[in-house]
Amino acid sequence: MEVKINNSTLALAEGDITNESTDAIVNAANTRLAGGAGVDGAIHRAGGPSIMEACRKIGGCPTGQAVITTGGNLRAKYVIHTVGPVYQGGNKGEAALLKSAHMESLKLASAKKLKSISFPAISTGVYGYPVNEAAQIALKTAMDYLKEHGDIELVRFVLFGRTTYDIFAEELNKLI
Image (cartoon, rainbow, N blue to C red; front, side, top):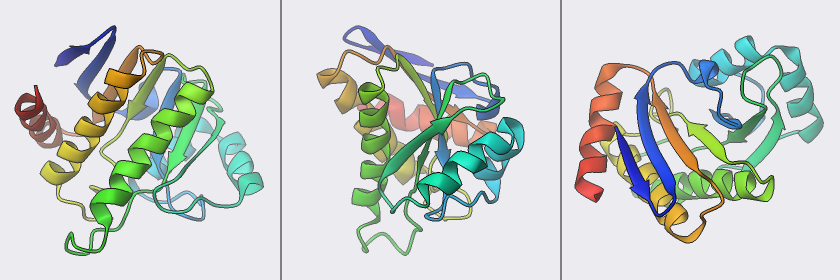
């Protein structure tokens, strides 16, 4: 599924983000940038040790912020590591932190003059964010950013599993 926003494209795809060839892929990291489960572990395994070496040099990343490293052995040149919130019921600032995680990743891509970026469904795995709420925040943030910043040509959400893809597609349809 694709939507044009000015001269940019926002796309949804079901698949494995480690296979993406966009300029950058986004990692749903932890605050210590220590590797972990889910997409974080998959990116570190596929990308090789150079990503962890770069993460160690950076040291950490607060929730809602983003940092960038090499893509190592990945097809993507860069990995943007962002830390989404752990879901605690929805009234502890989680929505603002999730929006910020996406926004800071997009700003970093623009600052690096990247033309394409792929996101996973940040915070929806072990961090427990309800997928429909996370999708609405992620998609609206990306759409709003692309309306104001034409430098990024492609924002792709690469979603693991048909259920997550279908939820993102449903939320995107509500926004267009």
